[in-house]
Length: 417
Image 1 (spheres, rainbow, N blue to C red):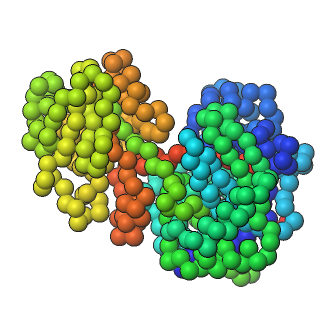
Image 2 (tube, rainbow, N blue to C red):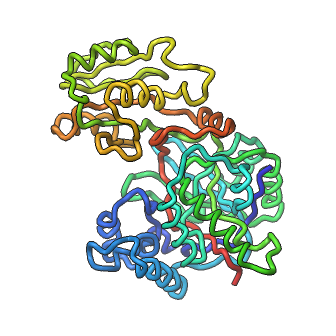
Image 3 (cartoon, one colour):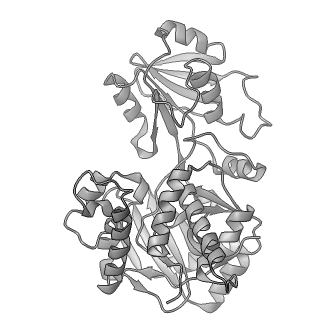
């Protein structure tokens, strides 16, 4: 069963939140962070992308960059731009995109739950990316940015959240980059805190939606600290890491599409002929065509859009991985026909996710940069949970959650002052 706890969040005073908050560290480049931060010394990018405080071209992995993150974190606290709450609390974080709002509970998630599989993952992580985030957690002694969890729908928690949502939020702003709305409430009532803790304790599992590397790094640093502490008890703050937990049914997963540089020495006619062995191929013309259902793909080639419907027998509905469209397209198109064996390392394939849409696929092919584009029907949250429950791992680049969590609304310190 899942164990969560409230924590004394470190967060900006209300009047500073819009100057502090930022996009997550991994959705933008150093150059973009430098531009977004501009002359705003309160921007969280000075902590999560501190290479912007060095000359252009400085590696984000330079040891001085990590130390600068810690210096800036201390500076933010010394200047009162970030202030620690005096009481252990939970928080509610709501995001509104295209008129739809999802409500997350900000909690301290148990490191041991990650280690034992109560917190379930669906993606592989890379050790180099884990190590980068571990260095960041170590040097700051804090989880500066949260991870993104899903939990099975829970009526008790939903009613509690909706009660707070009807009150004035602590923070309420529109993010300038994407125009999405963000609201934040503080849960300080002891009875409500106890309710949240007890409801999570009834859940057999939590699911990582987004932030696999941050989850791994946070858990590994917590375990590291436990090992180093001769007087370890198990209730220290480093036994927990910060997560925003959303009800699974509220989450929006967007399509995560593919563009490829070449047709593996085939011309278009030969490629389409070979596709027709596994797919019903239908020319949809020059207007953008979006897949309408599972096992239907949309291909853009030579100025035309095509519907590709996987034929019976090319997938197994009883196989939690084999039934996924990301697996079907990887096996039958990218691997079998195009010879792209490893999506993580191949330079012949790239990925277009999120809000950029099918127009971006068309643009990249029309520009001559790419030869063909493939659009997929989005994965469902139920599919992700089924795969995680079965102990399987999804193929690379399978999910794109939107909206992304904003960083800087609250921070979790690993050591009590």
